[in-house]
Length: 178
Ligand code: SAM
Image 1 (cartoon, rainbow, N blue to C red):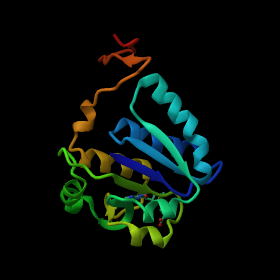
Image 2: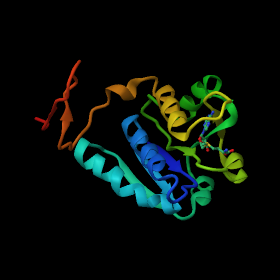
Image 3: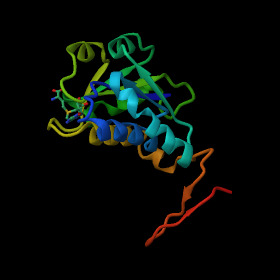
């Protein structure tokens, strides 16, 4: 399983970003998102999308995100511009998490909002950068997951959807699943 932990949500300012972290985690192959503190308020929107467009995907919350990181049983990846380049460590992360094998470990992917506590840098097995330039938790999560799964997440099957988009070169078509 791959879980994404969203740290440091700031009420007001981070509402859409936290929602988008959850939706990106869901769309690009993670199994669940854990929303820290007041970020938990975005859970319902993410669950609504899962109800409409399918799963499986779950939303959890925690008031003790540092404990979640420190007590995590499997490998922890923290996405940060100060980390090691993703292209240098992605293979090792796939290996330790068993991605693509039958023997997977639970992988936790941590993204921040404002300043991330140093405890997270220390507790993470991998501090990973998607370029060493400052950008966004949504963008870094998207690139990380796509690299982790080597693009296979794009072909994922969805279950229990109420709506399915029919891909079209032009226009919009949505149907109910068969
Ligand atoms: N200035 C903050 C700090 O020093 O921790 C980070 C702010 S940034 C808007 C929010 C989050 O985006 C970070 O916590 C990190 O997870 C992610 N992020 C931003 N740039 C990144 C990069 N180049 N590589 C990986 N993650 C990045």
